[in-house]
Length: 234
Image (tube, rainbow, N blue to C red; front, side):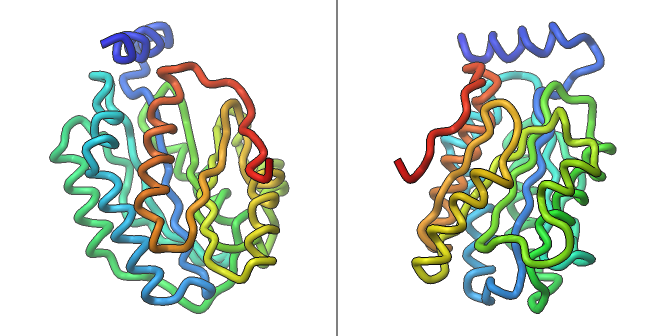
């Protein structure tokens, strides 16, 4: 009750043009480092996380809906939209999104990791989002940028000043790469008030990590998080 009232109060303060409390972009990594089995775990994990009871409770903590957009990304010219902007007003909306993701087919499997271009794609799609109080991009990936421009150039070139970018770090490679990927996301990818990274130990843990991340993102405006995330390495 209290949380819902706080969200409603924030939305009313923003004016009648904001019927949506959060525009959330979910970006899935389908670069060549992600094999077919891992891709299936990723799609199934995201679909299952979206309809998990605790995630649904976070979606519907307020009568003001969340708008979702989902796409997959890899190389600089390889972004494929899976879910166009959809207002999540009830469980049926979430179920429809989850079913579409679970049954979707991978668009590419042999391109590198162009994260800057993926961020640019997300920024472009945010221009078509419903009028929402907050805007968040969720970048999931298992590797550092290795194609085209990087995140810093994307932030300089695209209108992302008022967008929060969170990260889902997939620890699926050898140990050295894993330890380098966490600071890469922390120092170069995430941005904005309350931005954070969630870490998953391989794709088998993807669903649990996605649930934690979605609940935190959907609850951020409720508890007014403005602190920077802690260093995962201590």
